[in-house]
Amino acid sequence: MVGEHYYNEITTDQTKHFLLADAEFRYRLPTGLEFAVAVRNIFDQDVYAYTAYSGLRAINQEYIIRPRNMMASVFFRF
Image 1: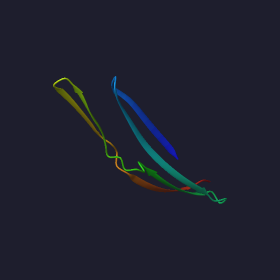
Image 2: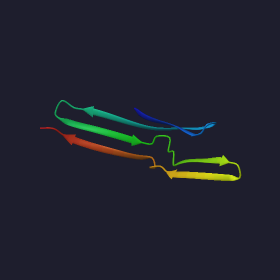
Image 3: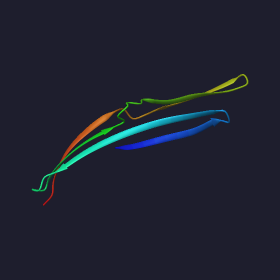
């Protein structure tokens, strides 16, 4: 398991927390064969967005995040 936590201070009284998590499982046989399965963005967070207000002004920021994906691999070591 791997997690990435982002903490941003937007203004002096506004903060933003964001968590991305990935998981990977590997299994190696004594014959040199290895199997791996990896899942990225387990929680399927698709957008990082916030709005900051200042007087009569509003600033909206939005970032598209990589979608959840899964990859299976087979390796052979010799």
